[in-house]
Image (cartoon, rainbow, N blue to C red):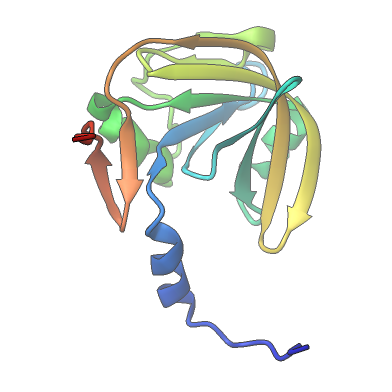
Length: 167
C-alpha cells in the first residue's frame, strides 16, 4: 500500500477542480435586526430527497461565517444567466452587498433574492470543519423555481448551458 502523499500545486489543482462545471448560487443568511450576509458559491449540491438535504461550503476564514452559524439557517439562491452581476457583487468585498439588490424576507426573515432560477430555504442540520472550509448541511423547508437559463461556471469563466444533441 502506497501511503506517500504528493504535493500539489494549488493553482493547478484549482484548475482541475474548475474543470467540473457547476451552477452559480448566492447563499444568504441573517436578518435586518442583525446583519445580512451573502456569498457567491458554486459548492452547492443536493444530498438527499428523503429527507430533503442540501450542502454547501464556506471558507472557514470568511467574515460571514459567524452570521451563518448564529442564524442556523441559510438560503440557496440559484442564479439565472441575467444575474451575473449579482454573482460578482456577492463575490466582492463591498460593505453592503444588499444595497440596490431586490430581495424579500423568507422564513425567519432571511433574505431571498428576487428573480432567481430557484431559491431553497434551509435549516442548518450539521456544520463540519473540513480542511480550510466549513461544510453546511441543511434541511429544505421551502423552495421556489422557474424555468429560465441558469448561470454556470466552468474552467474559470461564466457560461450558459445549451442542450446537447442526442443524435
